[in-house]
Image (cartoon, rainbow, N blue to C red; front, top):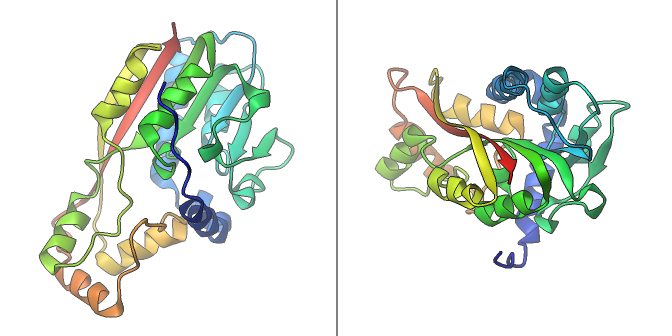
Length: 256
């Protein structure tokens, strides 16, 4: 597989800092993340997944929404929660967890894994497609990947408003769904592949951006908007007749 490029540590630090500041409020505001975790947990139960012996790992676990849903769905051993953000991990007590920057690859003590699960985390890593291929390579034969990740079709309203305002769009650049799927098709047999679209009420530009910040999800690879640019963006933001849209790739596959 291609060699991962040198990681851009400053952005990784920015992501960690944003989520650390929002850690206490995260669970109460992560409604879509909670719904997706429940969907993955329900699918794992409905499909009767049988995991081989070995580590079960939640990559970018945050406060444990996905781990808890999968533990209810699968039973058996606990999932090891892995995340760079110690403040989020500490929202759970007495569960297996490891503070680790996934831009470094997977923790060696968890390889090869019986199950690698991740929800709303891959998009924060450098080179998501290569990272996903790396995860597939680190599964045991017969092991399972359970993945949910927002993809590039998300937030058309935000992108259009920035374009009309003539300012940069500071939304995180999300990975392309097709390229992610391609990176899994050789190592995995895909048992479930869904490209989901979710809509939420548009509360207006400033409340929406404040919601993103409350979750700790405001880190951007681009420069922050100046006050003047922000005012232009908010003036160009459409009214409530246009909804906020997310595109989410959901994938369940077994290592060949």
